[in-house]
Image (tube, rainbow, N blue to C red; front, side, top):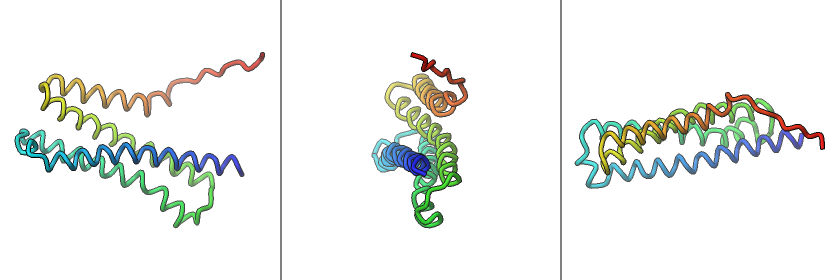
Length: 148
């Protein structure tokens, strides 16, 4: 049972870590809307800011969900179903997180140095995040020989 408790705690801790990153991006996007330069952005960029804000709001909602679910529905009890629920929620939340991150980077880099660099930065950030969060899981693992 200790292994299950540890897995559940690790899953909840990973979710909390992701929430911190999502909250930083959420705060930056909310602040963007109230900056004077926001109204100087082209309409499509303002629309993209709102899209990124909507995506990251969904991410925060998804990542917050496991903790109260664990307390309210599961009564604080650990089981394999809950641990897999937390992991599924995190896997679902990472896609809109990557998209919001890429859109945000596109907007900020485009404003600073131009559209081409914005596209490269936004697409690069999105692809990198998706590869690190999803792609590495698909790669085969190589077990080290423990015969010493």
